[in-house]
Length: 400
Image (cartoon, rainbow, N blue to C red; front, side, top):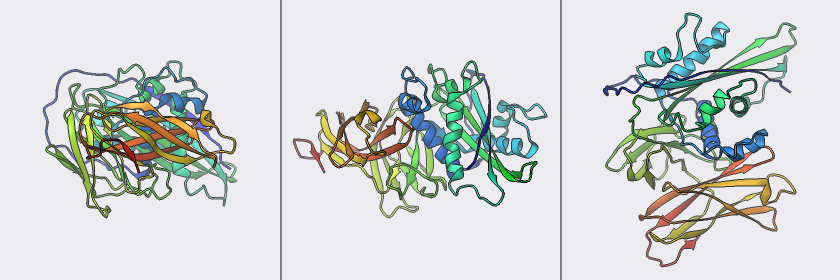
């Protein structure tokens, strides 16, 4: 059993409008698996804030979905070093004891910011001496930490919530993120408990208010069959090649980000731990685009033709709890071409549910279709990673 004593604070960002000349930048810190997981959970909350809020007892139904965030190693460096410094010197503030603020810390990495925002969170949990924390404690703590920031108890203007969910859209230009997590174990004054303090810093920033959007995501081997990234599942060293636009390589966590101009692209993941290459089509508009490569996708494949509705089941899942009905869940679909919709759930006699949807595509290609399913009672999630193959010779959509 462990208990939590949270503290949170925030600082406003200060945007500036002048442009930045490009130059080579230092490499920064690649995200750890836990930091990558934190971003996955944050992007899910941004993708379906209404469903995320229900499980927290918050009415976020009026909050518009926000674009996914692109991990930047320089911002990870700024965030993690600050979390480590707060742990090492036992303080909790956006400014260091010497008065160095977030903008200075970000710029010290080589990231020439033209606007930034920061949230920090800390929590302390205890366990009896000799009783270890759960092996998955750090992963569980990311869920708690994010919820703590979104609930934002004791913060009158709900600054963390506004920042992280981009409520109102005023932080849309802050497309890049660095998440830094640090922790430390100590013995409490009674000598009976081990205390684990975990500090998290989240830095959003941009180098220009005219910056292009990013393609971002993670390459992973879904061992649990949940369709979601978990620590240890990421595949590092995978080449992400965007036809006629460039390439990048995944971090050891499996994550990646690459800046792209608006347009339609063919993206191929190959090498690293992949036994075979995976190719998908994406459509980039004004927002960042999230493309996760699941080596073992758990959804179905829909076949269809351009400009014709493609409909059918995107996959099925087992009920989270006995007695669940379709009203126990929310399902939101990212069709991979810039279109989004609410999934329709149908209940089977075997205590499982199908998720159905319909979409049209303007161009031929193989699109990743991601369905985020949220259990509204407790906030548990599951993802169906499906595929839409558009442009085959069949005149009618097929499901296989």
